[in-house]
Image 1 (tube, one colour):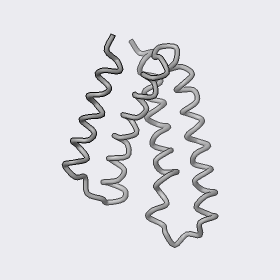
Image 2 (cartoon, helix red, strand yellow):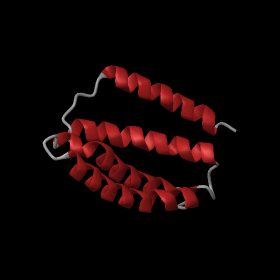
Image 3 (tube, helix red, strand yellow):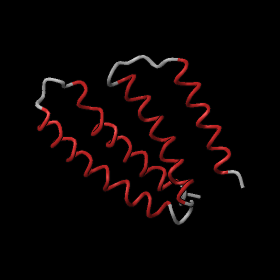
Image 4 (cartoon, helix red, strand yellow):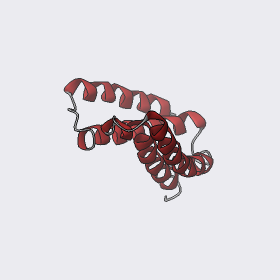
Length: 112
C-alpha cells in the first residue's frame, strides 16, 4: 500500500525544487543572468536527487508512461500553487478547464 506512495512523494518534492529552479528567479529580475543560472543549477541538482530515485522506485510499480503522467500531474499542481502564491499570478478558469482535460487523459492512460 505504501510502495506506490514513495515515488509520488519523491516526485512531489522533486517538482517543488524544479519549479523554483525554473521559475523562482522571475521575482528577481535584477539579479545577473549568470548568477541566476548558477543558482538554478544548484537547485536543479537537489531536484535530481529526488527525481532519479522517484523514477527508479516508481518504475518497479508503474510503467514509464504512467510514471511520466503522474509526474506531469504533480507538475501542474505544484506549478499552479507556486504561480498563485509565490509569483502572485491569477489562476484563470480556462487553466482549470485545460488541467481537467489533462486529468481526463490520465484516466485513459491508467485504464487497463
